[in-house]
Structures are given as structure tokens and as C-alpha cells.
Length: 227
Image (cartoon, rainbow, N blue to C red; front, side, top):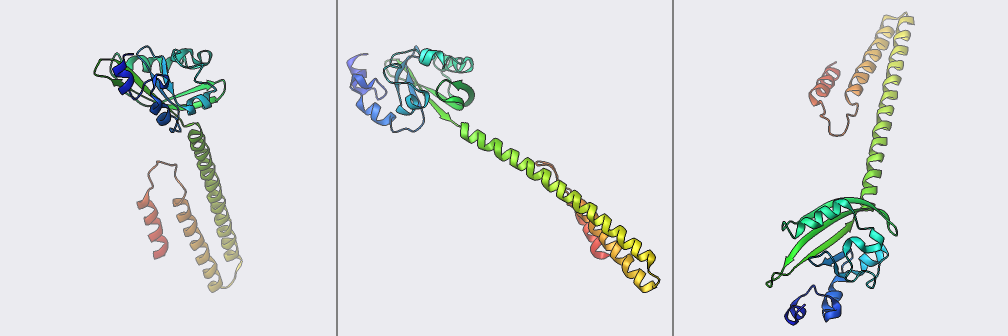
């Protein structure tokens, strides 16, 4: 590296006098890495070392795929990084899942882009956003929503059965009453309970993402109100 690049390169090796590089990168909470054209480590953030059990000494100048006994030799990641410089591509939020010896199974969002200098030298800025906890929470949320839907459907099913049972009891009572007026009251109550049961069926929850048949519900509701 020539003197001109050493002075003005903000992503150079801190050992070459770029102390500002270390100060800036170490303030970033998510793992950040600067790679040279051969995909060797120029500098990495402290969060990268901490999360994956590495140090500056055992990463500086090492090939990215050789870090931590090859834990970063991930086929999908290799394909992405090896196309950034030759094809001048940008990687944005590419999701990978991999088991790391220290961090365990992690889900990462990979972002990578080329940095080109006037002297035609190039580097890659690579960031790794750990979204493992976020994906876990999303999965747990989906499970809870599924359980809620099942419980709600079961509750509505039980309510429908109870309404049908009440309607049947009222009808039996109506048949046993000698008074026409009393029988009429029981039959009226029977019909109203059946109307409620009909509307309750229209309110059965549909699956998430499915259409709600509002017209069918409103029609049944109007029939019940008019009755």
C-alpha cells in the first residue's frame, strides 16, 4: 500500500496509522468487515470478534473463508462475495442460516458492496446483521396466532352446540305446554335462538389472509332483526 493511500484511505488497516478506522468501526454494534480484493481481512469490528469468538490477531490478513477453522466457508456466501468485485454487484439483506462453533445456529442478513478507489484498487464492505432472535419471535408469534385461531374456532363450535341444545329444549317445552299462549312464547324463543345460532355460524373466524363474506353475514343479520 503506497503512502498516498495509507493517509487517505479511511478503510485501511489501523496498524498503518488509520486509527480513525478502528474508532469508527468499533462503535458499530453489528459485525462489520472490510475485505481486500482477495477476500482477506483488512479490519473487522469488535462486535464481529466477540460474537464469533475471534480476535484481531487470528483474523488480520487471513482469508475470509479460513477464519475459525473454516466456519465462514459457506457455499451460498462464497457465491455472493465472489461476484461482488468481478460483476460489481451489491448484496442486500441476503439471508443465510448457519451453525457457528461459538455463536451456535444463527440467521444472518448479509450486506456487501464494492468500494472503488481512484487508483483502481477495490475493497468490499461486508456487514452481518444477526436476526436470529427476530426470526424466533416471529415463529413464536405465528404459533401463538395459530393456537388462538384454533381455540377461537373451538369456542365458537361449543357455543353453536349449546345454542342448538337450548333451542331443542325450548321446542320440547313448547310441545309439553297446553296453553297456546305459553306454547307460542316457547316457539318464539326457539326461533330466536335458532336465529342467533345462524348468525353465530356466519361469525366463524376465517383463516388469516382469507376473504370475509360480509354480504352473507349482513343478510343473516337482517333476517334475524326483521324477524
